Length: 185
Image (tube, rainbow, N blue to C red; front, side):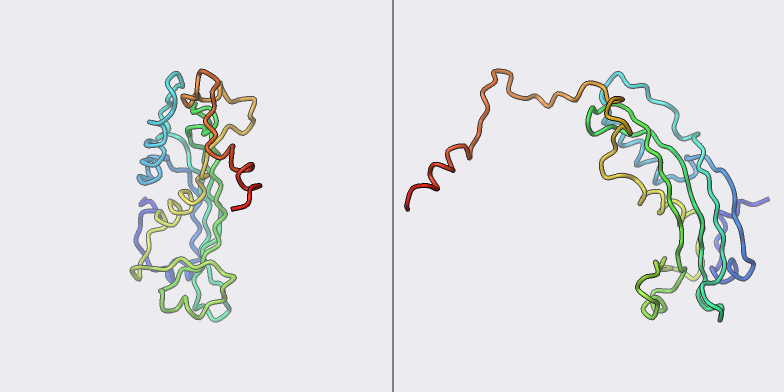
């Protein structure tokens, strides 16, 4: 049986069939996300164990239907979950980041998206057909944190040494500014 995530079909067909996709895929299926994680792990401090993250499960639950009674607005709802290794931005060691994306999107041509309520999130189609995997991957990429960190600061290793001044002399370029502001110019 073909993988429904990989099929290129029109959103209207998916909505008409009320297609449901409940599956678990390997993270390797999502090439762009895997490349982002791989690039991030290259920057982790030495000493952390690098795991084969590409085999990790991605739990996917999607349901296609209509957002309106006239069946003009195809919609996808659901949830996507996984955990990925990342570089902690506090200690530069490995940490685990939970990615959870609640999906609620209208699947529309950009011309049709103009007339939709701004409160609704729209996935603009470049083509009249879409591949559900692309939607899932984009939602996971958007769920990535800007700065990954251990969930608990106690789990962090030694805070990364950024090559600070060993002599204790601190350069403060604006330290004298307050006294100069007090003088009249």
